[in-house]
Amino acid sequence: MSRASRYSQEVRERAVRLVSEQQGEHPSQWAAIGSIASKMGCTAETLRKWVRQAERDAGKRGGLTSSDQERLKALERENRELKRANEILRKAAAFFAQAELDRRPK
View (cartoon, rainbow, N blue to C red):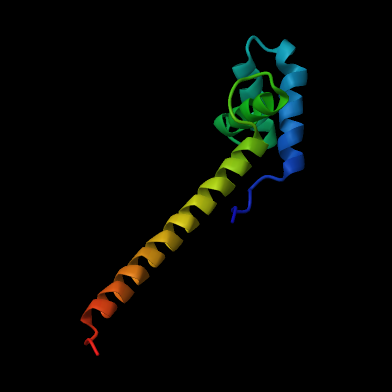
């Protein structure tokens, strides 16, 4: 379950779009991020992360896209559940095997 974000998706997209539009007016991307972050009410680091993720999603930067990250999280969650189920089954099998050995012969 994901936690509620402090900023809506629209605010994030608008901030990222502003950075790309106004990047030419600043000496560096970081300067543009700092300027826009103060106007948007978020930290520069938060906005930098949004910009980097948008760049990965657009294929401009290497790394996992948002959809790849979601799929990876789902697979890791499923893996944890399966490991837990296997552990329960292993313990149950050991319990019943021991019970069978302890049973008196007829």
